[in-house]
Length: 94
Length: 455
Image 1 (cartoon, rainbow over the protein chains, first blue to last red):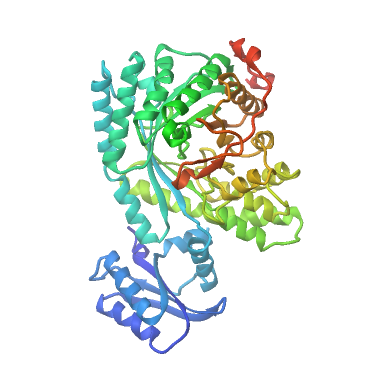
Image 2: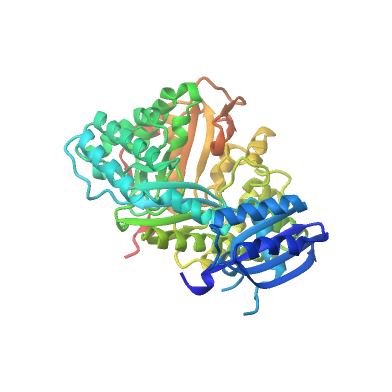
């Protein structure tokens, strides 16, 4: 798999509140997942945070990583999606 | 390393996946059985079983891995095989059934919900094996759960084999009878084709053509909900503008199929066949082709104008999709099954959509009369005549047409059949009561049309 094949996109959607970035970033740090880029914006009335992360050196399997993020999302009242970067590249770039 | 995809685009993709039912409808592994030999149903069946379970061992796991990593729902993992009539030619009827039972076992073993290819290609005539397989259809479909069957009775090059058409009329009727307690569900697994594609990933008509490689991955995408949403977002625009909007969306959803197809074939070490860019509805609300047509401005699907709207939709899907994939094939277009599409069901129930209108629609959609329930007392000859009409449309228009029709045992017009799951439910539709018996009984072959002479 190519180098960029290890990049994931984490999308967090919900109501803005204190501790979203911290909550998500803590899980990433604990799993040794590096944040490459982060942006947040209001889309369709919802707080949306998009993170691009490097999953290459993760200490967790993808399934478990996703479960932990989903758990944290639930705790914060947010929906967290984790997807391979290619999904978006393929759909929006030729 | 600056991130290059806009959050807006990310949201668009997520909305398609989460709210508009965008999914990969099927990853279908085509497996050639041409190397399988055996002098009896059990020997050949065992060999087929071994081949399928070896080649497709990783199919379901790979599909699930891709689903998890990419966050794209992959609804079905399926298998298609070389037409069994080719592989098992020479075996008698009962042993054909046995082969079908082995296929069913193999499908169960590898965890796929359907396996296609209990098929025969008889557009010009029968071999002994073709006839044995066709006569084995009712029993096979009744005794197996996951086996799907198809018979190609016509093509633009060969014409229409009316003997096969008549025989299929009888087999459909017998299949319904043998699966009587489940409303004739056996017929939902049986397709009669004209111009059958050899790389179609969609059931029940999938088989692995004789010109195909040993193994191939074919992808069927879906996404009527996404297209519906786009049409709704463009109220009042002229039709050219709307067609363009559909095209753009078809491009995007097909890219998902291309991504999944490439990745699945890479991981399985199998060649990538095609992406079939079809709009395949499900009984779920908002996942309906009929609703798209209605969103274009028809009060109900089936109203005058429906054929034109469907032609526009079918063409726009193809144009957008063909740009998005390196290899496009299969059926590619809009499906118009009745029982699997909530909007179609409602259109029939309010009296807007008739069998005749559906037949007209098949001239411009990707397949044909699909998942239609008709009264259980419809005669064999009338069913054959329905098949003949559909085959004629395909033959003359150089397109695939098909008939998947269920003469629901004991049911009359206006009653309902329930299949459950993706197969849905269907109102029993009116059939023209006048007879075509003498025409059908003439038999023989309807010659290929003049425009088949292209060399």
